[in-house]
Length: 276
Ligand code: FAD
Image 1 (cartoon, rainbow, N blue to C red):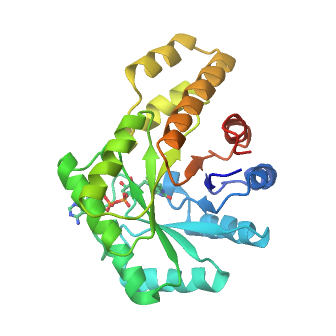
Image 2: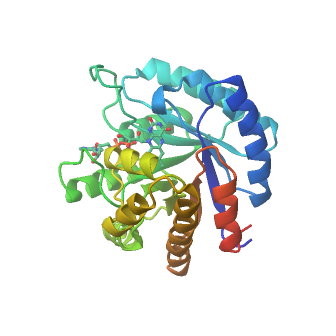
């Protein structure tokens, strides 16, 4: 074992998806995750979907972290949701600004995730451990890399306990981001978010929008495999294993796996890294 790890799920949309995710979770619990996080609002999922999955994880005896986005929300609605989460026994949150679906205006009483972090701390003290998002390859809406880094430092200092990064495939980008954040006085752990590579179209489509860069050589290799899923998986496993090995050698505090609700890629990575 050794290095701690955490794992992330998204709320399933159908009863079949929920059943499948229960089996996936049981397999992944073998890794003894520090916590299991559940996304919120991503891809049109609802608050109820997130809360239902969080409840199940808690009932299974695991630590659950509920993602919590504040865009478009009022202070009253956030206060109400925090009370619900506390009553459920949640002790860990991933505090996010989130993104509005296209066609919606901004509105709401929170501009940035840092406003949410400060509000949670002011309202609930130390009831929740708070994770925030970090972008080693720069958030897509950032005015400049420097502005993004400063915004991250403000968010960390607003009361975050720890950060999880957007996924990336350049270890150098991560280490430079951590060095830069430390120079700005950010002391919290910055945990790399690890996205296994299992399909090329999904990854290539998703990455541009979320501030993650697929290096040209990876993009071209993936495109070269066409529909050959087995080759994509084998290549992806090699690339991500090597990335994690570099991160571990560089002294990362932990690894956070974006499981995409599948057990095999994360289990195989953990096995290769000697974490499973
Ligand atoms: P912020 O930290 O508020 O940053 C957003 C932008 O505003 C950045 O460009 C930043 O530079 C700028 N900014 C921030 N603060 C300031 C400031 N004080 N002054 C000026 N500019 C500022 N999305 C979901 O919908 N659901 C999820 O469950 C989810 N989980 C995620 C988990 C992780 C680990 C990560 C990395 C991302 C996740 N996302 C999720 C995506 C996230 O919601 C989007 O990337 C969103 O666009 C930004 O959210 P944030 O919390 O990083 O925002």
